[in-house]
Image (cartoon, rainbow over all chains, first blue to last red):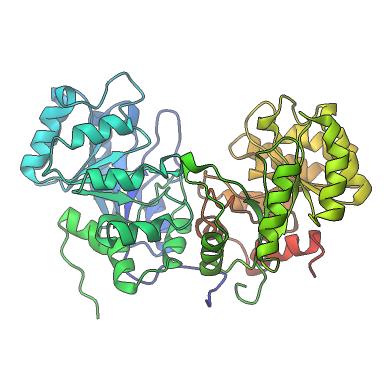
Length: 257
Length: 250
């Protein structure tokens, strides 16, 4: 198979998993939107779904407040994923953002960093509202207990979810989980068991897989290059890189010549 | 081959660890290698402390596709009596070409004298030793660097290049301090700029591509290098040129 020593994606691509801002314990190498856009340009990434990393463990409220300036400075290329955490204040903030017509996606905080299990009796109001409004939920398999995630999300059958952060320790549970949650998609940034992506294309279809990088904790390029080396057809690749995320976010379909 | 440059994966496994999906199916590994452009992969089996069973499985694995896989020997200081005879057998009879060690499966830090018989064997034969390195007390790069200083006739490769900071920086410092110390790239951690930092710190002639297959897909791990901000000549060395030279494959 011919290939080159350098790579930049030449077909439309949306990165479905990018954290922005400095976390309390982890400064980002990309201090502002122009720096992130320059990184996206280097790899040929057109758009990114971005969440503020302050919302992972400390405050979704503050993270979402900070996210506004990233989106505003993003030249229309940064789509917001608003963070959700515990408590009525978080849900109220999301509902106000939704009333302002700013919500295309919500991402759940890290429920494993504190003793707050992902259960319906804690998160039910949030999940019910997302389901009712047709808002997709991004949720990390690395930051949530897999059993709680599977059992709780199964109670919200119409809720569309995107599982992110699956990595090699999850290799054997991803396929059963995706079958257990038929409305879920899988974001692929950390999923690198040999052949596993091709297996999933066969088992659950390319319609349920999304390119994401987990930038800035992971570089944007490696998984993007690896996706171009999968034994899948061009239509499947395009779905994974762009089409599925575009559909989930309700973005206008790109027209290509 | 990538752009007529050989691609050699310096870090791969034989043996199964099915709870995390690690299965040493050679056809599955070759499929991923072919799609990535990897010509050859170095493999070893770290699951048997006496060495013999694992090294036999490595040799059998390589024998199925000798043009694509290169076997390394494994021994452990947990069974010191087996080290010299098993290394002799693995190198001379099985044809394995370097030595892999794995401190997390032992109670000895890399600067402990329990490892010395392995390093002395490598020095006597002019072999390469690749060790897992990370943030663990047993596997710190600086402790492996101490071996490089003492056994200057052998080559030492820091698998994962320390894996995380500040141990990645420590691995680079060891490469700067010891000309027989090399850095290998596989890691689940893929922050932007890691490859650039390794090459800038140690020199492109001291960095080796590795994937950790079949735990990880060589397509993603090679993608780290292809998409890094390095020159073509630096990439040619890292993806295979250095390994070709060290394993006498030229």
